[in-house]
Image (tube, rainbow, N blue to C red):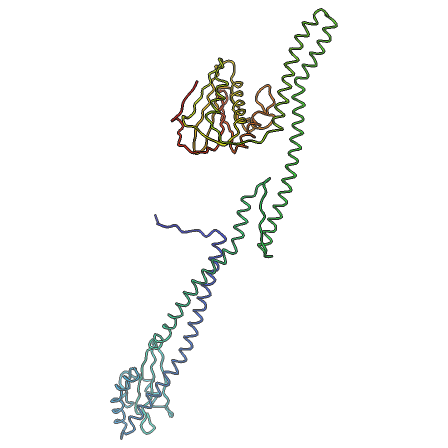
Length: 482
């Protein structure tokens, strides 16, 4: 495996940075190409002028040296004697040829050129990447010989072009690094408001006071942020309207539920009173006996009405939780002691030896546990012996209370509705107990959830944050009570 990974430039920030850097790099390459072309053209002109001046100087020196010659042959000899001196002075390679016997190193064209021209002029051959000049050696205004002067082009280029390009390359690298840093800052300045907008969108929630984004510039990003702020305001208005609609709907449903629950006991009460009136007319001697029996029925239904009224009152007027530091072990043991003496079922308790502290409302927590254990006892059919387990553990800085029964269980299609108001799996009751419990647990910054299997039983879990973290294991440092 490679020790590094190639990063994919998928983010807008990376794309802007790469684009700016590529544009800067391309600009530098174009500037370098134009600079190189300009220098080559400029140097080519200077080089031609340089060689022309050098050739003229060498030609004058040759003509000056042979001025004392008495014959053409002597002129050629004197020129050859001066060759080495001229080569050292001008750093060139030089050959002297007589036109009468030019030798093998001078071609036919050059020989014909200097022997047939009426007006003799020097010329230059730039083939084979060499600068070769042919100049005539004149004796009494007649060409008697040819001098070849050779200089390579690399001499001039290495001395000037590459030194300059090397210097300017260092400047380009420095400027490129500065431009790259500037490109990164530009890219971040462009994407920073977009990143802020993305963060605010992730935090956007219905029913919550969402923050607006401030942006003073009237540009494209400003328009985007302005639309976001407008959307937040509209969302808040819609949330308020929706909340009001839900409250009104909830109260209407609550009124229907109250009416329905009250009708249930009122019907047998009405029938009982009608029966009492009829019985008194028909059998006055049995009126006392019938009245006692009817009174017992009426008292039972009145108590039922009282329970219904109390349940709806508790749901409508849930008190604010007074969360204080409490010992959870003590609360669980207290609830266990209230139910442990039942003879028709076994109720077990498992709690850690070390105390577990949480922030919660003790009275509300007792009510919640009472409701869970009471529901567990009612969920167990008469055909089996009841078994209820209350267990307290700490896991991942969470205190977890489990109430487990071996009752009839809850079907999967009812699990999502179990904490909704007026929903119940029993034949009686208002269906508000678990809804009230869920609201209370939420006010303690906790959560309540369940796990159930039909005909096997149900586990209810209450989860709260512990104050002092202790390293408890599920099965260590636990005492068990029957």
